[in-house]
Structures are given as structure tokens and as C-alpha cells.
Length: 240
Image (cartoon, rainbow, N blue to C red; front, side, top):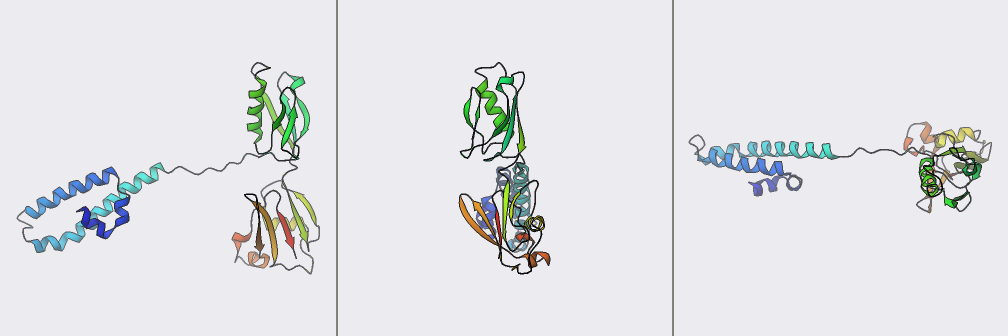
């Protein structure tokens, strides 16, 4: 039976679960009983119905295995926590410990901040909650059950740049989720000489510089909606 099924669906056998194997075993026993019965003594009658039995068996096993796969597939979640970057301005407050509180602390170019008793600590690349927990862990040797609050005062590191044939060239903060089209609006729109289908987006991806072409006119016509990228920190848009 398994050899016969393998001719019809090798992939099906590859995903069979224990329940499916049990089903196949029971099906073989049922097959032998049917062939041996007087109703299907004639082998030609059995061959007439054989393919319908195979299809039914494959369908049942597929339902069993696919149900198990769906039940165990984890849901993808998106991390929306703000990630601290170089230049960001933080306020760090330790409850009932004014000497262990800092009103304004800027993240240095090396990604670190200086904090009482802790000295230098890495902040860039951490969320505010992760930095809070790290500070509480380090302060635990000096203060009993420290409670730290980390507040982001100014997101200096979250900026992008627009150059070329736009009305307001410059550096802009990322204050919310925004697309390339919205970035053009913030920059005041295009000049009359702008090549709107030759726009370049320069982005750092895994430490390497990548260049993407933005076709503004195609986006307007709905032909290239996937080209309307979300702006990321340190993106540079060049309008020739």
C-alpha cells in the first residue's frame, strides 16, 4: 500500500504523522478483507475501485497532518519597542535615590552613557525597558531593590535625509511611521527639474549600503505600491 501511494504523492509520504501511518495500516487491513470477500472476489472489480480508495486515503491523511501543522505554527509578532541610538537624549530616574538620577544624558558616538556607580554602560541597540533592567541589575549591588525609569526625551538618532531636486533639502526626524511619498511631502515637494522616476533611496542593510530606485510616477498610478518604502533611520533620498 505504501509503495502504491508513493507513486502518487512522494511529498505526501514525507509529511505523514503517526496518526497517518496508523490510518494506512488500518486501511491495508481493510483492503485485505475487501479483496478476500465474496463481493470483491473478482480482481477486476477491485481494480475498478482502487484509485478511489487511494484518493480517499490520501485526503484523510492530508487533513490529519495539515491540522497538526496549523496548530503548532507560532504566530509572528512584531517588536514595536523604540530602540535607542547614538545621540538620543535620555532622562534616567531612580526612585528615592536622587544621587542616582540623571536629568539629561546623551548617548555618545560609541553607543554608551555614563551613570553614577555604574560608569559607562551600553545604551545604543537596547530598548528603554532593556536599559532600565540592565541599570537595575547593576545598581542592585549598591541599592536595595532599585527601581529605575528610563525616559526618551529626544529621538536624535531617528533621522533621514533628502537631497537633490526638492524644495527643502535637509535632515528630518522620524517622528512616526512614514513612507517615501510622505517624506517628499515633508521636504516641500519637487522642483520643476526633478526626474521623478529616477529617485534613489540609499539604505544601510546589515552593514552594507544598498541602493533602491523609487519610481514616483508609477507609485501615483498604483503600478508600484511596493516601491513606497517605509522610511528607516539614516535613510538618504536623492532626487536627481
